Image (cartoon, rainbow, N blue to C red; front, side, top):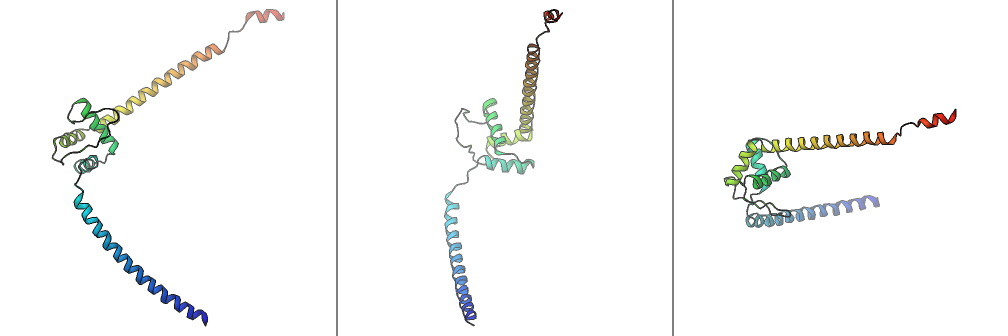
Length: 163
């Protein structure tokens, strides 16, 4: 019978713990709500590459990786100057636009719709294939030359000495 009383005491203690935990959880939720409201109001919306990717997905239905989009942005800044950005090694500054109506954003969107990212991927893949073919051809030429040098011609004098 002692175990029953102990079990009942533990059950009562568990109920008290559950009530305390529920009250603490409610307090935590209230504190989280208070913390989130000022943070959302204080942080202005930054229109960068991630926002651009979402816009591209919305307009074209295709999902691109940030790396692919940044590569296109650097290409557009370097080649035709539609993006106003200095492309130098070590430039880690973020891309920032005023929103989807920004002229640079519209130019990027037009370029993506024209297939710029896909054509850049294809060109890079073709370049890799060509480089690999050159490397393979050079390796086979080197191997052929090594085989020719490795096998010396048979000496005719060796056959005459045995006789």
